[in-house]
Structures are given as structure tokens and as C-alpha cells.
Image 1: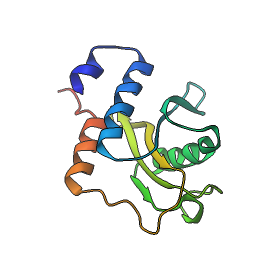
Image 2: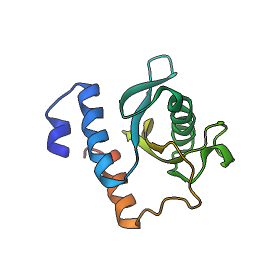
Image 3: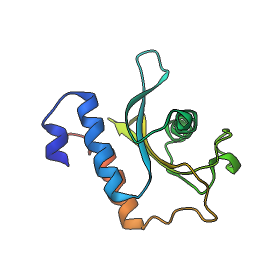
Image 4: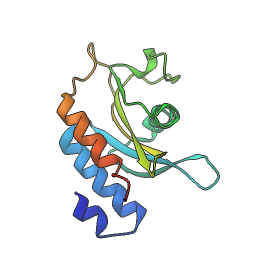
Length: 138
């Protein structure tokens, strides 16, 4: 993955690589990469399988992840007090960081709620975090 990302400077191409990899790490029907644009507003950089009605839920999840810098794992966004959105869905979100700053979020979403939150193995979460926040150059 590192080679694929370093092979291009195009943000959309990098986002596509991240989405393709994320889909193999955690089974979700849709994935999106959301980042802040030059004005500070959230912008959808790339998506995979995202339906138009899912976009507000993805943006709400991404906003929370970017603001807090924490992972989001929930079985029902519409009942989750961290995210205010009327869209019942399972969601996961991971912050994207660059040089110690939160610059975006990788969000996976399934358009139906579940009775249980997704279980992510600690090793998987650790690996995802390491890939999404490169080590600082020394």
C-alpha cells in the first residue's frame, strides 16, 4: 500500500488506493474519504459504493472523527450520541493525519443498523492507524 500511495501525488488516486484497501480490511458496503478543503469545509474526496442518501451520515461521522481524532465504531448512527444524524447505519471511521494534524477521515458505512457494533481486532486497528498516520520524518 505504501508503494501504491507513493507512486502518485494525485489526492484522488491516493484516496482510491485507501478505499480499495479499507474494503479488504473491514467488510462494509460503502467507503468514503472525507477531508477539509482550503476553506475548512468537509469535502468528499473519493467514495466506493456510496449512495446519495448516505452522504450526510458519512459527513457527520467524518466530522466527529476529524474533530476528536478518535476512531468511530457504531452499530447505529441514528442512536449514537456522538453523531447527530437521522440515518440508521453501521459505521466505522478512522482519522487521517499528516504531520500531527487531523486532515480527514476514512469512513465505512452499511445502510442498515445492527444489533451489535462491529468487532475490530486490536491488531487490525493498530495496523490501520499506522497506515493512516505516517511516521514523522526525522
